[in-house]
Length: 186
Image 1: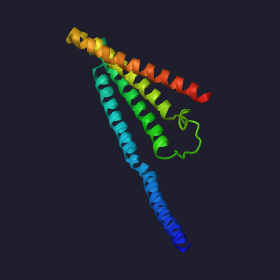
Image 2: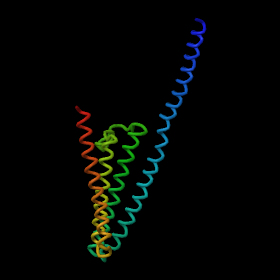
Image 3: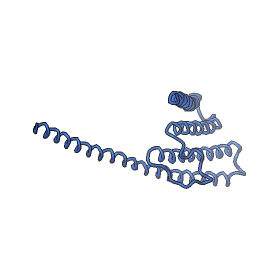
Image 4: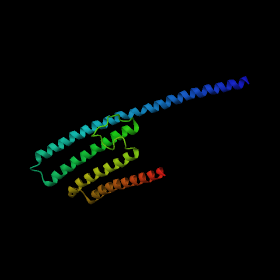
């Protein structure tokens, strides 16, 4: 009888030891999510670089506006649009990524707070991401077609094919998300 009690105490002691290790591991993993925060700060710095590129392009367009052709002006404008879309995409990734993987953003309710902020889950993030990629790809494709005389038919076909791949991916993401939402709501 004493032997059984000793075995039970040893087992209990081993379980407590294991539970302590498990707790430490889980706590470390949970705190490890903060390792993602520097990535989001880096993406914020990338937006600053895009802003510099945007103003450089705007400056170049401004000083050459009177001598530039309509095509050159259009390409400049498309470059500005492309840069703005990319910066917007990075903002979505920063906010949603931080809230989904690191911590809730604790900002006071503000009038200018984006309506999607705090409401975009991982699935919504994928849809917004692919939508922005398709928009950026479309802008790039427009720029390519303006200078299409510089490219072979094969190069143009590849560029259109890549854009179509993005569009199809977006549609498939949306359909998959729709099916998942209907499955989980029932």
